[in-house]
Image (cartoon, rainbow, N blue to C red; front, side, top):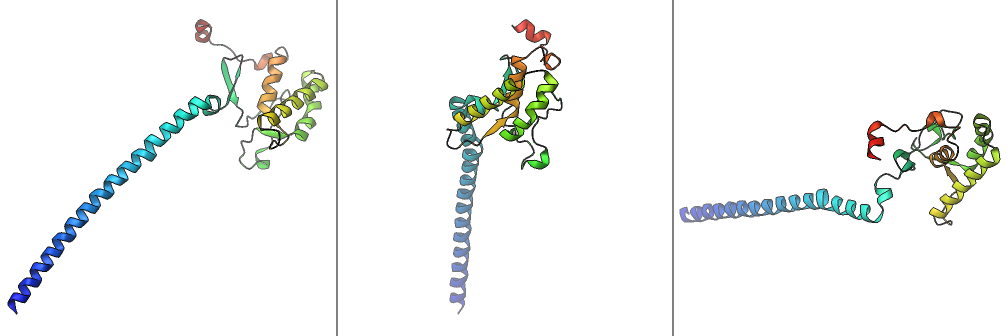
Length: 184
């Protein structure tokens, strides 16, 4: 009986030893896989996508920034800017958009603002309506016409107004710093 107990004890020790060895091997393998996946998904994948994005779509990858005279960024066409002056088109109020930062308004909303914009700036209403229609058409072409809703990008129209009528918008002109003047 004693031999049976000793054999059972030896078997239990061997089983425990093999379980420990198996657990150690599996744990080290699991840790290596986790570290590898962290490196691949946390570092390599984002760097590869950033490189591809910068190479193929640099404008979009850098935030779709609109510049004035190719110098200073005034905003992104992807994020709505708040305009409070009556000399500019206005975006929808935040309670009327899902995100609160929608850069677009409907063509009807843009046309409805045209008369007030004309009164505030002295720019003929037909000119303002033409700028709005050109923006709608540009948006349709950029979105392959078929998939394009009729919308107006407020920032694009407002920057175009500033470009075409600098005397009306002189108070909103972007000032160039001394450093920027020296660089040019």
